Every structure is written in C-alpha cells, then in structure tokens.
Image (cartoon, rainbow, N blue to C red):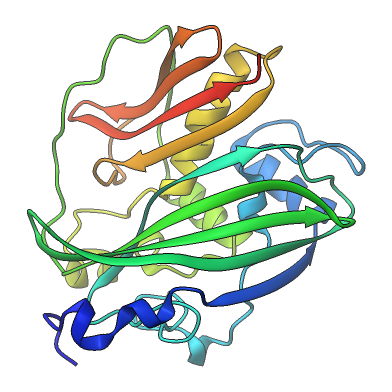
Length: 281
C-alpha cells in the first residue's frame, strides 16, 4: 500500500472508537528498576506510583514475530495501519485525580478518540488520539490522552526556538545505557532508541533517539522536585523536535502563577520538548 494513500481512501475513521482493556499489577520490582534507571530513591509497596511511571505497565506482550520492522507492535488492529509512515509519540495530556498504588492490580481502558490526516511541512501526517482511563480497585485514578503521529520518512528537524529564561534548571547527558534501560523497563521495542544501524541508515537520524516519554518524565519531575509541597492536577506536553545522543539536555521550567508552570527540555540547538503543569489550588 502506498504511503501517499489518504485517510479518506482507507477510511481510517473506522478505527475511531476501537477499545481495549488491559490489566496489570503495579509491581514493586519494575518500580525499583525504574528508580535505578532514573537514579532516584524507589518508593515502596503501598506508596503512590510517581507520575508518568505508569508507562512501564499495560504494555502489549507480543512475540517478536508480531512486531513491525521498526520494533513497534504491528498496526492495523487496535491502532490504524502505518501506511508506510514512521510512527512517533508526539505528546499528550494527563488529568490526575489520584495516583496508582504500588503493589495492587490496576486496569487501563483504552479508546481511540480521533484519527485525522493533516498536511505538514514534511508532507502528510496522520494524528491518532488515544484515551486511557486508569482504575484501581474499581476507583478511577486518572485519564491520559496520547497523541501518536504517523509521518512520511523525512530528515529530522535539528534546530528550534531558543529556550526561555528558566527559574530552575538541571542537565542530563543521556547515554546509550540509559536509553536501553528505559526501553527495557517500559518494554519498548522501538529500534530508534537502541539500534544504531537502523536509526541512522533506515530512519535518517544522526544517533540514537532519546525517548519522548523519558523527557516528559524528567521535565515533570524537575518541576515537582522544585515545588514538593504542591499537588499535581494536570500535565500537557508535546515534542518540538527529536533529541539524539551526543549533547547534554537541559531540564528547565518557570512558574507562571501559583498554580501553573511552563516546563521544557532543551539543548544548545533550542527547545526539544515543552509542557505545562497545573497544580491544585
């Protein structure tokens, strides 16, 4: 099937409303492994799961034969077909009521809310919005919307706007070990994060790609660490351009008012990812 085939010709809107239900145990072993990967103290059984660490759980347990060339699960079932495009996690939003609790089973109800094709500067883009509702012991905990983009293979963007002035700032030098361990603990087979020949020869990047969810986690917790007494209400984030190994990334942000903060990830070539944090008042 040709990559230029349109949304309407394939009736991608038929995927809107697709639903799946996934159950998992918020096990302490994976929590400890994420803590080790991020270099932080691990919470214990019975304590809240840190925000965005839920991305370790509710992952499809597929055989290697059920993966596409890029290492993602083959699409065309729950998710729409790829149409010869590369699939990327472009951003998302979360509305928090309560955290998941470590050591208890939980459920993720996933629904495709929208599929739309747009024309971007690099050509046709298909955007898929997936809603996830997380519950534990029958109680709703929080809602997440993930924005997945399918784009034609094109050279990645290397520069962006300069980062604004920050009130807090730390930096991380991502390593191939960090990317591998984050892929492993989140059961993410996407080859752009660990397969150097694939990511450079097939997808055209200059090095391994830093995970968007990893950067979102670093950006949000950079803000939470700077404001430990505030209660998280919501978080929105979007990728501006890819980050690859070789440069430090800066984890920064600034308070807009008592209940809102802007956060971002940047390097010497500008902003990589940006987001907004809202606190309860």
